[in-house]
Image (cartoon, rainbow, N blue to C red; front, side, top):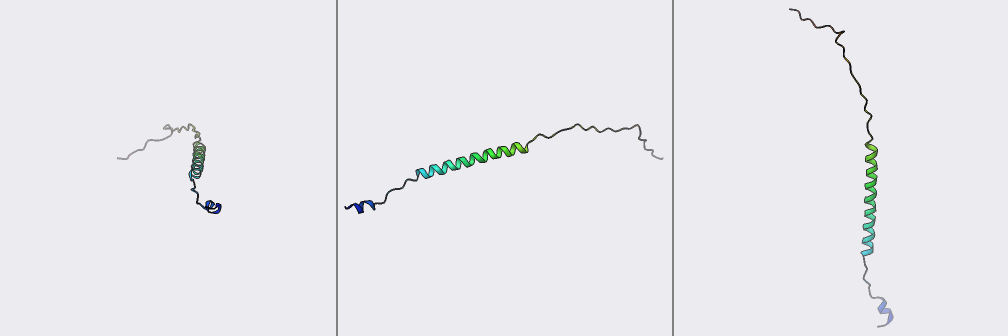
Length: 69
């Protein structure tokens, strides 16, 4: 075999590194979405200000209804 024929032999490609990089990118994106969702939840769950409102009614000024027989 001459040297030109040896260089034309197809070499096997390894997809291990490509798959690893894709998995790392997916993990980073999922982590970012998780943290972003946590911030949105904490912003939306601000405590409501509760005030005591008392309603008073007075029966002293009201007159009883009279029913005519």
